[in-house]
Length: 291
Length: 159
Image (cartoon, rainbow over all chains, first blue to last red; front, side):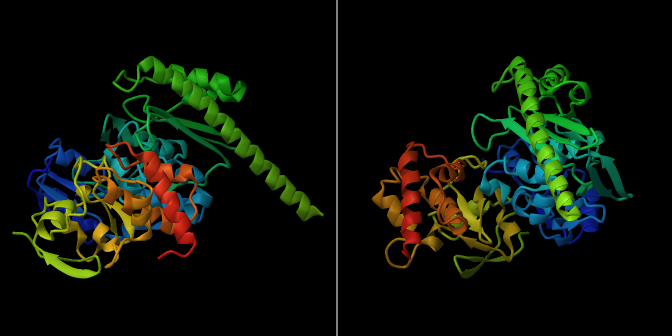
């Protein structure tokens, strides 16, 4: 339960981290270390070198964007996502989802960028980024590349990130007022057996994403389409049809499909309630202003 | 070659030259002989090795000592007064919040962070807060009771 020997390098900026990766193809980035270090301790991962991003202050920034959205650095920790007033105000879905990650001691170290780069199909934040239509920004020797979240996750623990690139941050567009998040875990802090995150807007906009139900987080487009004409239950039924969950020790694929349907319905109902509340609040405010 | 790392542990400046693969837990226990921090699963599941890093709980088995240059680490030894017990420790004793004691340092450190942020947690909040700390004696009911009792004593001005 001790990791194999490795060398350690503390990167002072993004360029140093990238050049360290370019020099050593077996090097790994160390962010929060809450997934990588357990794998190293169990010798499932044996990087030759760790390039530590924890000293790069610019990667820990949470900033308001001019369009009403947010930019989040890759080293923003989950505890920051749950407590930051800016995140709670501008992207409450992220704050709510981050509270479900692991336990407090894990959230105190674990990072947004780490969750994205690790790409566990049952992780909360990648699916939330799909639901929010976020952009993932990566940096490498050739400069920066930007990916729609939906195009970044390509398979089990696999993303578009090249070996010599690092995730530097995420751009979150303005969040629609309706949102919902639901997952089922056997114990508090476990990875979800299945989960759904979604947003609804006044203009009929609907984006739903599932996690733990395929080899990557997936948009539930059939469920979104069903919402336009049907009720939340119809969306749930559509979601079950487009999930491709696996059988494993925690749950059967059939049970996961059932969960996707139930969780989608719950998320849609929660999001509709918040949307109606936001609409009512806006109308009350404009009526008050008119008086 | 291992570089020299300087950090603060329980208020004291310490330095060492741990190999990069040396976990903070092993650095505390083997190099500094601070054996109050316990090592259970070594992959971040059991919570026995929980310490405070810059005031926040962290699994010391998932940190490497070389990462902690300049950091302030507090272990169970640092949460224990020179004489007697802290209110949390006393409440664990009084409520039979420990049996074998293996999980206790991690439980106390975790509860310390909880009570610092929330002086009056409900039993549900306490249960959620310690959900990442495993007690193999399964003494959870008395642990929850001990944290609730400590919160009450702290609100009443215990030090």
